[in-house]
Image (cartoon, rainbow, N blue to C red; front, side, top):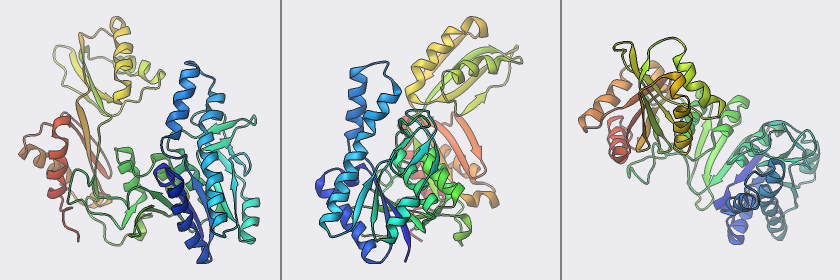
Length: 406
């Protein structure tokens, strides 16, 4: 007997037929004698509608009431899933975040989980009952409903799996696993049977949308074994596991890309101490995250500084920088939203040299100019013009031998 947390995303519970289909998958595990907790997202499109209603009602809305509204989608799905399971003869009941309870901090709209009390759920396991838990929500220190931020149901599932000391956390979605790159762009993309936490974390943070970054980080910290599966096929999925569980490590396991990038170049800024702080300080104060940074060689005491922000933050970042032009003393700003970040990722990079060189040479051979470079221990990222995205992905996928199913 195993203890398993199953999480079903919005597309997996998009309508009543899909909820019944998901309930059938839960029943299979119950029939196998396993203890099951199910975490559900809102039905596809529901959260967007609820968010839109709050914004229409009040532009500067009370975030506490925002959480009350947007958490309602998961409540509906949890009740419907429990009903579907009961119709299949499965003993099941729904749980909202406050009923368990899932304790969070008081940061409404993006709360962090402090503790999950599982005593009652575990007692119900002993009675053969399935727990259907509304994802994305918890209860704050003052008794108010909180939400965990977009994609927070993945985090709910991993946190619950950690609290229950589950053997595995299955994430059911509309894809059947984690691929070496986006199969919609690269036809030869291969599904990975296993990937390390670190690689998955880099893939998620660099643009792959299979798993939410925060949930992968939590799984890595608590050593929760994740499995990514499709709700619509019976094919094997991808296990996200500790590096020790992967015997033979590829040098490069995957290639991710992010279109949510914009580049800003600050021209002819004084090359002296404190200038970087004067530029990036106001951005940080406004919660604008800066990613890649490069500074050109100083000439005549002046330099150009180039960095990236998310595309949605571009206009706000430019306005903030223009506001401090007099204090900083730069000559001009060049914003560019037409860029994409491409990253090659693999734990095998730790023990192999030449990965970056191969990336740079492959792009050069295709006539693709690299605008910015950043690296970590298991990742090399470059910023290129958005028009070359597909060409770059296909060329790099071939160059690192990822086209081969073996």
